[in-house]
Length: 161
Image 1 (cartoon, helix red, strand yellow):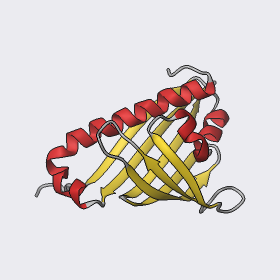
Image 2: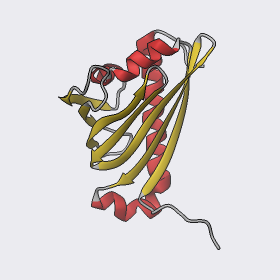
Image 3: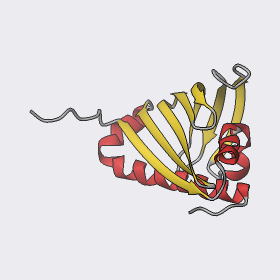
Image 4: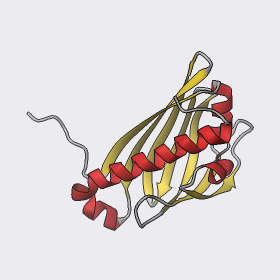
């Protein structure tokens, strides 16, 4: 029997960053999503829809993104789990549906960051072309995330390792 395969419009995308900065500084920058457009070139705008509790749990933000391809996406993200300064998980719904998880691990005075994006394509045109366009979607995601790592390093005044 063959192992189960993901629906062609479902993706699990993983990005690893290593920043020469302590985990608390990286955490604060990632948690401050309203500031992302200042340092992450593909984040067009972030609007707070709901502040959540005192820690930011259940905060909801509307995020508009551009990409390396000639299209952009917009979706709302609700913070569904956080454990300072190690884990931040959000549920997205809108043009993309899924769960994004930021995991931060101290490594001496530096921080390793892993972002896992488990996403379902909810726009009809993306679902239709997903079986043949999957490599292009992955290439696009990798470039957007690489720009995020570079922008965050510049924002923090540190090196990517």
